[in-house]
Image (cartoon, rainbow, N blue to C red; front, side):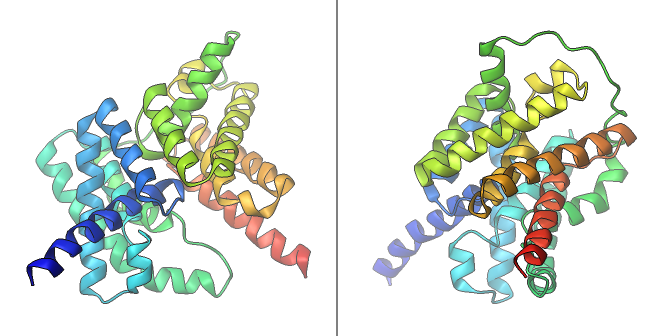
Length: 287
C-alpha cells in the first residue's frame, strides 16, 4: 500500500503540471513547471490561482469518472487553471477570489464533457472555451471590463522593446506580465517542441505588429496584451500549414481589436474563435 501511494504522488504531480502546460497547448509536465516558475517571478498569487483551479477541475473530473487518459494529459485541468487565474486577476480580495476560482474551475470540469462532445460532432476543438463561458458568467458582477480602445499614435519601437513586448505576449497566455515570465513560457514550449516555440513567437510578433499598425497603444504592447491571442492561435494551427496559421492569427487580431473597441472583455476568445474559423474553413476547402 505504501509503495502504491508513493508511486501515485509523482503521477498526480505530473498530471497537475501537464494541466498547466496545456494552457499553451503542451501536454508536458516540464512546460507546466516553467509556467509555475514564470508566475512565481511575476506574482506568486498567480501560481496559487493556477494550482487551485487545476486541482479543483481535476478532482471534479475524477469524481465524474472522465477518461483517465485525458485526465493524465492535463485536458481536464487547464480550463480550471485559467478559471483560477481569471478569478485572482479580476478580484482583489484573496478569499473571494479563491472561492470563485474553486467554483468556476469546478464548473469548467462539469461543462467540458457535454460541450466538447457537441464541438467534436462539428470537428472543432474546445480549447479554452469552457473557461470563457464560465468566466463570462461571473465577470460582469465584479468588473466592468476594459475601456473602449482608441487609436493612438505609437512611438517607434527598437529591437529590445520589440523582443520584450513579444515575450510579454507569451507571458499573458497565463495572465502573467513581463518578458522574464514570457521567457519561461517560451522555454517550456521549446522543451516540448521547438517548432511550437517558433510558431508561438511568430504568432505573438505578427499579432503585436498588426495591432500596432491598427493604432494600438505602445503600453498595451509592452504589457503583452497584443500578442497572446496570436501566440495561442499559432500554436493551435501549427499543424494546419503556414498560410492557415498566419490567416488565423490575422483573424484573431481583427476579433480582438473589435472587442477592445466596444469595451468587451474578450480574454482568449479571439484565439478560440479564430481557430474555429480556420478549422471550419479547412473542412470545407478539403472537401
